[in-house]
Length: 234
Image 1 (cartoon, one colour):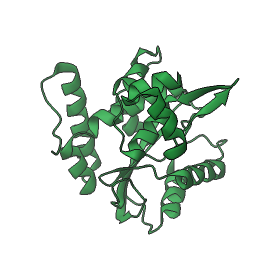
Image 2: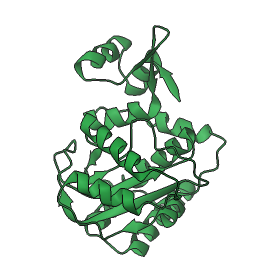
Image 3: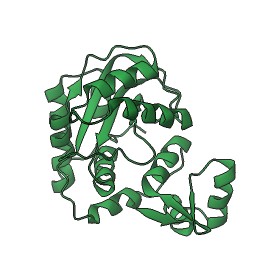
Image 4: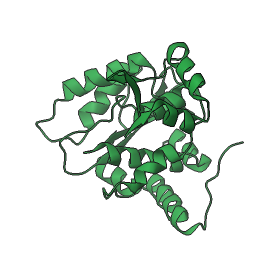
C-alpha cells in the first residue's frame, strides 16, 4: 500500500508542510518515483511507533479491505509457536536464535533474513515499548510460503533493544506473510491485542503458552461481540 505525502500527513494528523519537514528533521521514510514522493504504509506505521507520533488506526484497518483471508492471531501463533528457550544477552544473538527457530521451508535463506533484520535494527529499533519488539524489515517479511504465521519469543532475560521507551525487551513477535496486505492485517490484529495490559503482564511473566493463547482468543472474541474490553494502563 503506497501513500502520497498528503495521504500520509492525513494519517499522522499533521499538515503536508509538517510532514515535509519531518522528512529532513525526523527521517520520515519516503521514496521518490518520477519526481514524486511516496510512503510505504508499513514503513509509516513503524516510523510513527518509533517516533512516538500518533497515527490513525485507519492506516492499518485499511488492510481489512484486502480480499486475502487472514486467520485470527491466535491461530497464526499456534502455527508459528511460542518460544521460551532463547537465552542471550545481546540483540544480535537474540535475532540469530529467533531466526534459527522460525518454521520456514528448507529453501529459505535464513542467513540473508538475519542480515536484513540486523540492517533494519541498525536503522532504528523495532522495540515498540513496554518490553515488546516486532522485528521485521521496513518492507514486510514477505516470503514464498503457503500460509502466514506469527512466532512469539519470550526471552529468559530482558535484552537492551534501544526501544522507544528505553526499556529492555522481553517479548518479540515475528510476522511472516506471503503478501503485504496480509502483513498489514496481521499488524492490525497485533496492535489490538497488545493494548491489553493483562496480556502484556502475561508476556512479561512468561506465562504458559496456552494461557497466553487463551487470553488472545478472549480478546478476539470480544472484538467480534463487544462483550469484553481490553484493559489498558493510563
